[in-house]
Length: 440
Image 1 (tube, rainbow, N blue to C red):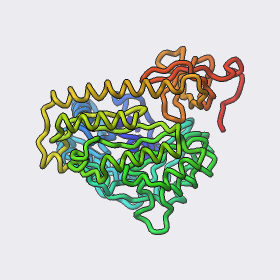
Image 2 (spheres, helix red, strand yellow):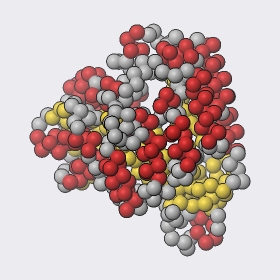
Image 3 (tube, rainbow, N blue to C red):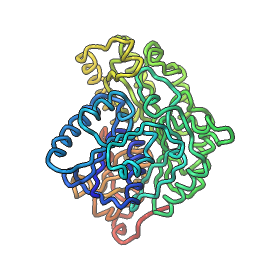
Image 4 (cartoon, helix red, strand yellow):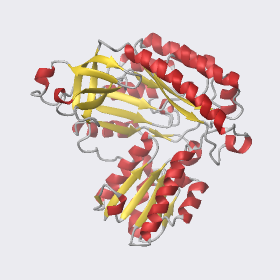
């Protein structure tokens, strides 16, 4: 069966795609690059914002037309599939296979059923599932916890992915051992809230302890996402600072700088708590690289509230940020109870925030000019005269392709920086073409 999987959304979705893909391989599936070549098209969906939902609608419309011309099996999985909104879309576009985020291990039964198969249950075996290592990859994701116990008023994730369920640490370490054997040099630990790891399971290590355990596995680079400020405790900071393998990069979503808006978002912390966490992080790791998420134009946000977000951005001095205008999502408390702001107000504020982000990203990136950093080169950039990669601080980096002839870890002197990119030269570039793949 020729199969094509199309993935929208977060890194957890990418991990889930790998999990399902490995299951399909065991069933003899052959993967093709485009849905036009496929007998089975599986769409892994996101429901956090409206834009990816519209992309799914458009794609499923194309696939329904294709089904009129030839036999074609169409599947939909991921967060959107778990919602009534997604199920209505699936009915409209005649989706054959529908799997929620908790039912991915049922993909084999879905294929074998040879008729419509829908499963939206949360199956315990998913937590115990151990996918094989991806072949030929230097970077890989490892799920450590699924679901979320926080109930932010704008977020649909607790509905789509359920409550927090931590994986057994032995399974996590076994998966990382497999990745190491396959040549992976960078592992990103995944969860809707990684800092909550172990809180739901008596006897499990907490997240800081897990970081230390993973640091002993021999993987050169360890990252994690996503964190909730409430759970970013001192033991997590200490574990990062004392475990050299853990990268000096933290993504810590703030969402707003206004305490009034944070209350409306049900974020469970206030500006002062968040800034205290930033101070503690920087005391332990002076060269830490910080990024965040910010929602602009949340219902009820005044110009004064927005100014507080801008002032918090200046106080923290983020290296980068993911910035979004508020997108009302059916099924969330904010959709039900709050009046959305005019789109033109949200767009105008987003543009001002983007300008703030560019200023700070340029300023923060300049501090790396002249320094030697470790870059994981993935391969050729769009401009094939360059190879692209990223630093331990997650900075996108370009180096001359001739200096990094194969993927791997390189020591790079940063020569130039823009708001969104570092440019460098490989240390000992004249010898680089003759040395083997650099892996610590």
